[in-house]
Image (cartoon, rainbow, N blue to C red):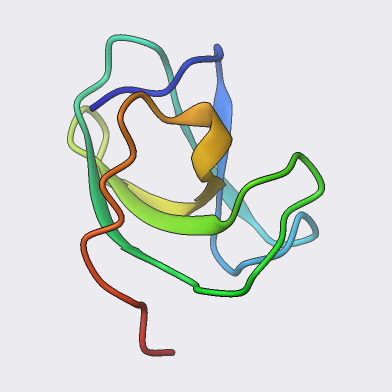
Length: 76
C-alpha cells in the first residue's frame, strides 16, 4: 500500500497536533490498525501505519492510503 499525497504526515498520536514522521507516494506503507469511530480533519478514520522506507510509524487519515486494509482495531 502507498500514500496518495507527497510528504504525508504520520502523526505520533491520532490528532493533527502531534509530532510527525512522513511518507511519500512510492514508499511501502503497512496498515497496522485503525481507530474505529475516530474522525480526522480530512475525513476518514485514523489508521496507524509503518513506512518501511524510513521506519516512521504514525497515524494518517485512511483517505490518503491506497487500498486501506484496516486489519484490526488499534488498542491504545
